[in-house]
Amino acid sequence: MKRDVGRTTRDLRRHNRTSVLTRLYLHGPASRFDLMRATGLSSATVSNVVTGLVGDGLVAEAGLLDSDGGRPRTLLEVRPGFGQVAGVDIGETHVQVGLFDWTLDTLATATYPMDEGRPDPALLAGLVTAGIEEVTAKAGTDSAALLGVGVGVPGAVLPDGRVHAPTLGWSGVPFDGLLRPHIAAPLHLDNCARTLGQAEMWRGAGRGAERAIVALLAVGVGAAVATGSPGGVTSTTSEWGHTVVEKGGAPCRCGSRGCLEAYVGADAILAHHEQQPGAAELRGSGTEQRLAALVADARRPGAAADTVRWAAGYLGVGIANLVNLLSPDRVILSGWVSALLGPEVLPAVREVMDRHVLDYMTGGTVLELGRLGQEAVALGAATLPVHELLTAGGR
Ligand SMILES: [Zn+2]
Image (cartoon, rainbow, N blue to C red; front, side):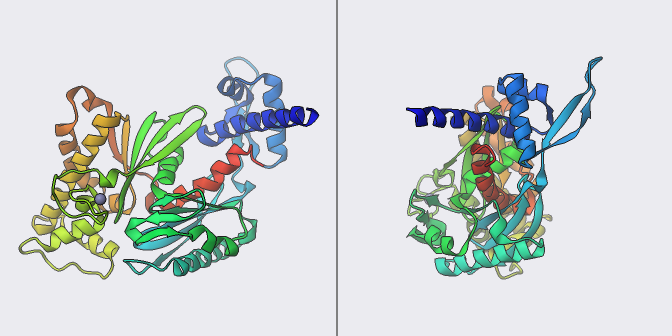
């Protein structure tokens, strides 16, 4: 009985620390008074919690805020120097490891191209651990001192850590078990579209959105549905890439036909280009290099421009379906293919989307590009240990 009371008090303290810390982490500097209003906690509780967070090095004072006529208020903010996290992007074409401070500013990155097709899980696990050592060495820190390591995979992660990733040819691969013996810090694995959604909501183009759809365009295509609230963000993944946009259409690697991924995935775009009469040979060896060459060629009229417009049409249809189904206030195109196609393709996608979205919804959804740059997916993975830290009240 006594132990239950102790546990309840501890839970309450942790809950209060999580509320204050999450508010500061997601929405930036605030005074004790702002924190009181945002969390609904009493002035005494906020003071206590803040004293604890400052003492633990998570939060620091950030100057004074004039309040009309009254005493100036002290602003508080999260302290980047509290600790560091690593995020790993297991793509279909590369492995990227990023080292970030826990507020998600990039400190160092390492990118390794990988064999496309069916990569060997043990080989990939080796690249991940080498990458973590490389980025921590670059930044002059110790990998064992990291707050945590997050790994984003292009597939589903089961509760026991096994990974199903059709684009990698993985079915039930015990990837967690391959990594864990070599990583001293707490390790978290999750679907990369879901974590990317979380990252765009926390630090990117999703900030302030109520319901954003974050599309991850790469070789595979996925989307996260991310919901923001004053208390935090939830992000769930969807198999958007395997919704059908053409009945009986192009074969998809999932075994079905006419899936969106079979039209707007990087391989699908390149394959379509090759079939165009008069298409020039694309320079470069890997998928990323060849798609970059295609986008460069598409700046003048010809087969490359036609291919990009063709893909933009399917992308517009896929987005319109999402909008009609979920009425998000924002749709964000993220991932390396979005970064390459960039602003040039947005007007064409928007035009097709507008043609298929119901009239009364058209004005309600903003379409834009992600703002997290080349490290977007690695940064998304890095939100996993940070989320864990926030949930634990910073302990
Ligand atoms: Zn499919």
